[in-house]
Amino acid sequence: MTAKAANMGPELMRFIEKSLLIQTLDAVWKEHLYALDHLRQGIGLRAYGQRDPLNEYKSEAFALFNAMLDELKERVTAMLARVELAPEPIPQPQPMQMMELHPQPVPAFAGEPEMALEGAGSMAIGATQPMRSDAVDPNDPATWRNASRNAPCPCGSGRKYKHCHGRLA
Image (cartoon, rainbow, N blue to C red):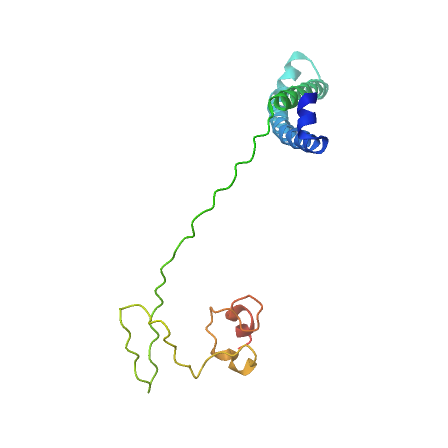
């Protein structure tokens, strides 16, 4: 055990001990509470044997608590005896993932000619979208009423327009 502590270093060993103790204590405590619940359900039968159920519960709960502490000591010691650090594998560089994007074509507005694009469902490289007259300008609150209800609010709050400034409209 001391050789492991010397190889790992005192700080890392204390961290491992603390982590194992907390995890094991959590599991053992849950088992203890389950055992106490089971004891509570059957303790009423002691009255038939002319024994005080409260005193019987106290004495048996104390015995269960001591058994829990012994179990905790055994589990933590066994885990610490088996703990080993594996060397970290050297990460291999991952190839970049390529994605193919197909933006939807922009519908033409009244009075504007339709843009002819090659390939259905895709935009030609360098094609620009026509400027909409009802565009929302984040710097001009007068244009915010043109924002879609489910779009992010132009004020920059991060909420939907309908829950932010759209609620006032």
